[in-house]
Length: 326
Figure 1 (cartoon, rainbow, N blue to C red):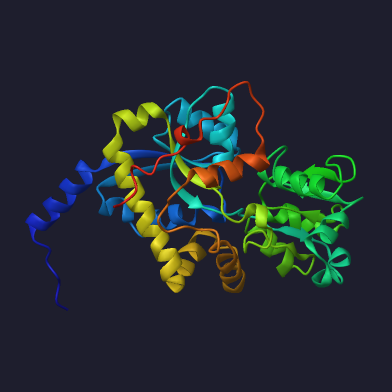
Figure 2: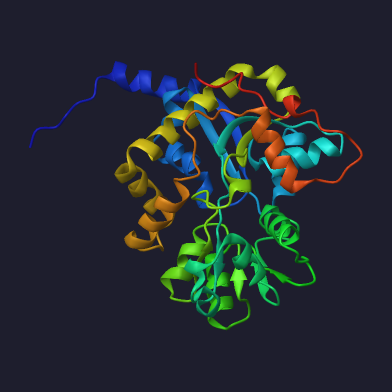
């Protein structure tokens, strides 16, 4: 058997590159499929390609992720733009610098009784049919609940009131169990929970927000990379590298689905290959490649979220395209 001897110079060069890698601390808002580019970048060693050493932490809840960015405990937060706007109306500045997803990363899922005949209904009729139901969301007053509140108000329903709510977090099993036990009739779960409910035969898509069925939620700033103004001032080259990493990872997801699915199958090993493929196909409709953001998108996102606070939002100050690859 012939042994392959690696030259000492090559080993030394490799060790040197690892030692010289620049650390980047990243907080992810939760373990959701929406963060696909992060998982690809980590597993495909794209961070290392750009001289970065990622330190990734996952927190449960947007407020914790937001606070880690504000306090500079993290250089970068994988944050919904909702939290950037919420900070803005409270007089705190956090800046999005890469648009990961420009549509919601959840659909409205309903049980089989509500789904019967729904394909023939208009959006208005579907929303009105939710009267008297109990709907599950990941968290109280989150983006999913706010989106449904906008639709309910538009078509003459009150949320809460005509529609009651329950909060189940992000774990897929919680939604599958809730549907199977008839504890809820509808939900807006973060994927992969929606697909897992469908795979269990307990529900189906009612309003497809991810494919753009509902006009109000088609072109938004939804899930982003965000940083504090201090980090932007102190570490611009670091953020530029991070944007390159995510742009390359997003391009893999959009242009090489087989490779992307293989990577995400490792991130979600308990899912079947079929389920992983279905989740991928659904969520890939929301991912961007260029990460670009516009003020029009920012205003469209604000119009349905309507975060409450004493300060007027200067939309141009809540995002920047400065660090995107040219």
